[in-house]
Image (cartoon, rainbow, N blue to C red; front, side, top):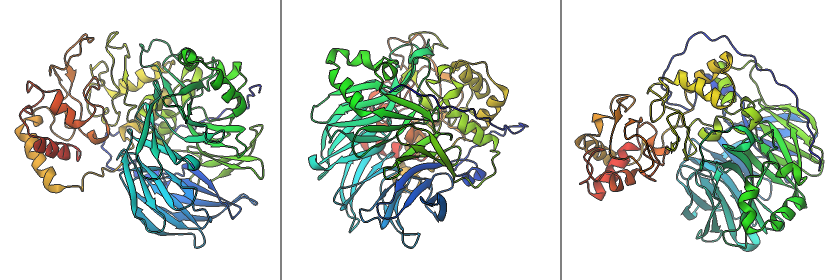
Length: 601
């Protein structure tokens, strides 16, 4: 298909910027920001002519009558709903509530929550088995997939997978469950019956993997994600040589086999692929491109033909080809009319695709063949003028700020301003010394910024970040981004209420090991450089600034070079000479207690 352009221009009304207060937020975002509607997931009823829209920041479910295109009901939900699946009879909607660590059951006849099932930490994606007897949930912070009995709520299995699992899909006739791991460069194949790990399939340059679907009768599993070129220095923005964006097409029956296909254009990146939906006949794949506010419609016959024609020696070359989408006529990309598209749903009876636009608070109705926008259904209840903080959140996730649109701030720091778990050679402190991407949650009040302290403050860091996107810092953008990062979107810490006795013992270990010599006060950082004997052979310096320990439970891998996969590894493998606290002689039990305490910070 010839690529069509159906773009419009969006103007943001920026509020006047007066002053910034650099305060710590113990909730996910400033209180007023909960009032915004942020559509993230869509589900179409199998028995009623209805569309179910999850709105994340105001924790609600909107029910839309598709014939009239009106919101007929709203249901309050638990904190930060993220994904939903429908029971086979269409009577119940199961909703993952990220911040309440549970699955809520919405009775669609009474339009109310009728029950709740406790699961792991930060449940994200959901899937229901084809026979309707099992509910699968990806617990993104627990790094597990749990299977539950629909009838009894009993846990059937709870399997550790990769880091930060986001979405999953079942291939019923083969008894396979495929899981996309958001902070691992792989997908996990599970036996859908007993939860055994069948394969951990490496996807090499993958980053921030999102939705997953099966295609061509289950022959292929397809995952949306970034193609991260962290193997090289970040010297070239153009043509996708820092981050590009695409699809990972995995052949289910062939261990290890996958082909990466870019959705980018040569001068026009397809930043931040997120949601996927596939037509019943398997001929069209729909991909939401969250960073550039577009929908890609992919011709599956042409995609599969390209995948099957790609020899093993050409897989890497194809993954680097940002002209492949256009050269091979793989589909079209169209603007959704909204901002921040994430979840998708297909209405094949009407020939429509619905798109959840996170930042404009609406749902796009698009022609499923041409991609033209028929209408925008508003879910937003707030005034059109957004707060400075909300503008900053949008800009952080908006790749239109980047030359050629290949990446956004969220491409390296996720949508919540944390991190991608990769090591990047940013060359602002010299070439050839890649370091682990840091969460931005504590950057504002722990200057200087970055491991080497090359930015004196986060204010300077925000300006540098705009230059990294390829443009001279814009004053209005700078103010909005600074406001956003001054009160970062923190999730509630689920470890605070865990084993209090172990945490108390761990605090004593922390003090006895003199960890508090450098990690003290409200920031758990002394703001100074230290040589802990952790310099890697390729590095030009040995002294690095003390990072904050706040939210350390979610910011791995650890140390400036990311060599420690877990908190336990820091003490067991990377401190033999007691230069990083007096931990070399700790027993396994003491280390376990110390880690239990650290996870509460």
